Image (cartoon, rainbow, N blue to C red):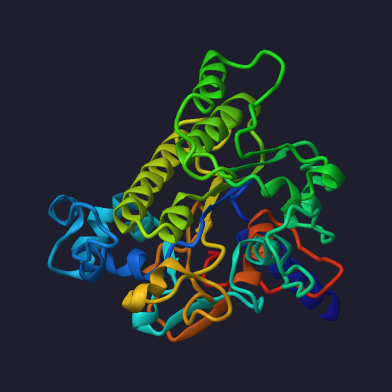
Length: 361
């Protein structure tokens, strides 16, 4: 009888394990640098649209992005996010519904944020945006060391500090950032054209290329090499906000939403990626409130700059839409979530945030 009971329990365990096996074979993580949860969930802010200090042509921007309700405005601003991800995936961090996502690092700016996001823990020794190699191992490097993912991890970013955040030198991961050309044997005609074009346009930011080139170079790399794990870091939202151009901040968010739609369309029409790829979208930090121009800034002295958000879509993501529960989540949980989707337990030299169980089906 005991042997029979043991056999039954083993069968139940095996069946349960089979039932929980994930369909996700590939993960793409995408960031919008310094993009506020306020615009994500509420859409455009009328106090900033109608302030000529921040919006050059309020009438034109009102026509393009304004509507009466939050729901209408956010749909106009980011239609893919609200038509597709909100119906087939989930979006976390709507503080109007007491659903919170915060960074755990004490600095509330880019390098510490990206390091926390990709490593799964905050490191207080990383306290500047200087081009110094990250002493910590990112989840990208961790996965690249696994036999299954070796040589199948890549990163593209608009900001030229990403090679240091990911530690390209030590990790050996291909990282294309700033105005670097994408070089590889037998590159496509499209890649050659993008390489040329990115050096023949105005350079408004210096250390950061325009996101359109980051998106399309990353997509060309995915077409040619089919990486299993991909990081894509966009930067214009942060740059235009710092310069006080709310109109261009909104337009950049809208463009990035178009890039997300384009990437998802490619994923769902490529046999390698179709129905077995999860996209995770988030931010490295938040920004201040609209009043007194604090929306332009972030850092430990700017209230609200610690507040971020997370969105996800894929075969294992529960299609719950906007999460409305009173919950506190953190940036350091993304790395473990990414690994768990791939069926791997992530560990590092320091304790890492636990996976977001809301996301994983």
